[in-house]
Amino acid sequence: MIVGFIGAPSAGKSTFFKAATLANVEIANYPFTTIKPNHAVGYVKILCADQFFKTQCNPRQGYCNDHNRFVPIDLMDVAGLVPGASEGKGQGNAFLDDLRNADILIHIVDISGSTNENGESVPVLSYDPLNTIKFLEEELNIWYYGILKKGWDRFARLIKQEQSEVYKSIAKQLSGLKVTEEDVKETIKQFPDDPTKWDDTLLFSLSKKLREKSKPMIIAANKIDIVGSEKNLERARKEFSNYLIISCSAESELALREAAKKNLIKYIPGENNFKVISRDLSEKQIKALDFIKKDILERYNTSGVQNILNTAIFDFLKYIAVFPGGVNKLEDSQGRILPDCFLMPQNSTALDFAYKLHTDLGKNFIRAIDVKNKKTIGKDYILKHLDVIEIIAK
Image (cartoon, rainbow, N blue to C red; front, side):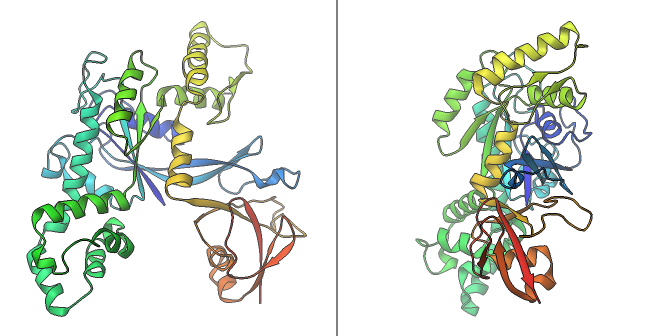
């Protein structure tokens, strides 16, 4: 799956992106720093199955820190969107099109109000960040509407003439946006049976609902470390109660991860504390870390970055983490213990997992074994989060 980062210019997207990935992306305080979509590997955090077996894993991908397993996911950061983007303003529709393959969007908002909708710096709290939430939501809806509306009259007549199932035809037309047949079927229940009678109001309503289903969105209220931001956060949660809004300080998380990378501190992303392990910190570094500890971690219990990623994958997209392993041997051919961990869609079966591992395992599936309790399970067994599964094939 792909997690897409969106927001107005200079809202802190690139900082959030780098904090989540430690990828080498350009960060600057001027609009359109990101001019091409950046893809990089981020990580969701889970309790590692190695704890159950009282051992230490050796991940092939990702990493494990004190039995916290970090499983890779694909993150995409696109350039800042400005009002009128769907009409070609700013960097225009090109960047909206970059989001086509995203499964979920994280809208990063400068909740401090220190940048306006065009990414220009303004005095703290002088701009209302709620305006940014409104315009970006509107731009996304207009984007979907423009795609659906294009050639609609001819399209609707064709559906009627061929007596095609409306929801299947629309889903096929919008499949590039990851709209599913179920999304459309559920949305048009109360619509007239004849699509040629759907007016612009109905089409826009359909576009909005399909956008919400195919591109669910979490709002990251960034720069919560700036004094006064909390008032805007409270207002945003009241006005946009239909969205999950999570406070965060991407800059604080980036500082912590960079410090940990340089062995100045011991820090596990997503935790509410860290431990200083270096005696060579400057006064400036000590002061910065003290601020993060007291004003971010102790106050909000987290910097928010890891929490947002985990929420996106596990709560919104409903993925689960499953480990391949053997009852008699947890190691692979190179001696790595529990080297792999796969994110699987909710309600995946043991057979789905076999195909995930290798097509031949799926085709030649005999049975599977729940390694934790050593019980045999069939192909229709519904996988659970943190299962360890052995596949037996011909």
